[in-house]
Image 1 (spheres, rainbow, N blue to C red):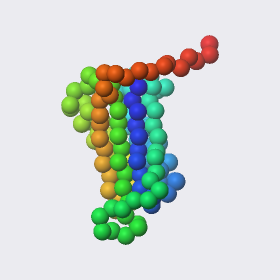
Image 2: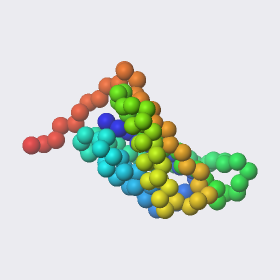
Image 3: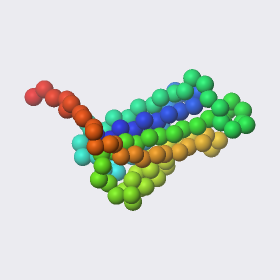
Image 4: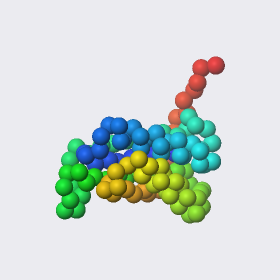
Length: 118
C-alpha cells in the first residue's frame, strides 16, 4: 500500500527526478516494510514555479511524503523517513533543500486490488 509522492522544484532536471524516484523506490522496497512490491506506488510531481528563500534559480527543493497504513511504530516511521532522505540526497546537488514526511492514512481508506491474469 505505501504511496511515496516526491514534490520537486521547477529547477530539477528530468534526470535528477528519475534518479531520486528510482533511489527512493528501491530503498523502500529494500526496507522490509513493503510486503509485496506491487503495493508500492511512487511518483514525482514537479512544481511549475517555486521560490526557496532569497536564493537564485539554481536553488531548489525536494519534499517527499510517504503515506502508510496505520500500525507502524514511531521508530519505524522515523527509520523510513531517514532511509528515504538518504536515498533522495544520493547524487543530488548539495544546494537542494530536501525533507521527508511520513504520514499514516486515516481509517477511512479504501482500495481496489488489481487482479493479475493467471
